[in-house]
Image (cartoon, rainbow, N blue to C red; front, side):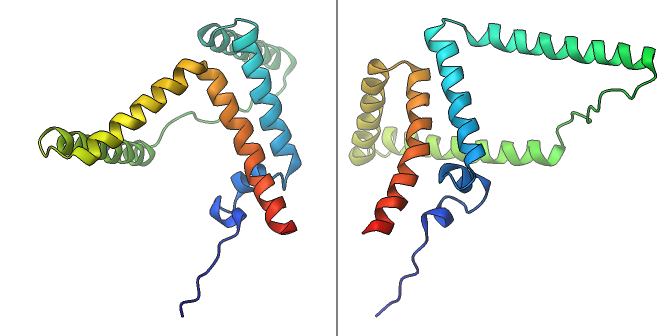
Length: 167
């Protein structure tokens, strides 16, 4: 008889900072994620603010603060703002490109299998998923759907572990 190794919910979520945040082991992370997701949802969905204006205003505020800090630092003989070198390494770009290439090749292989291979099972699966996504998309706004996903990701793992420990 095989002995199956059972993973805890914490281990199945990666066992790191993400798992601690989703399981509310570090309350500050969960609170910050919930508050920021709620604030962004309210800002974009209810207040009518759009993403381009928000990003532009945040960057304008950041550039203004850094400019004033740099000018005042030179006048008052204070240190300049601690800004790190903002560069993307070649390794990280190559790694991201490899990941994207793998996903695109997988999607293209499914499309090839449907079109050329005449695989009815794959066609029906893809058609069903696309219809389901279309139906769900017609019920919700995209930002509301993302917000619901954040709320579910912060509540379902905790509820699962709490009901698992009480049983």
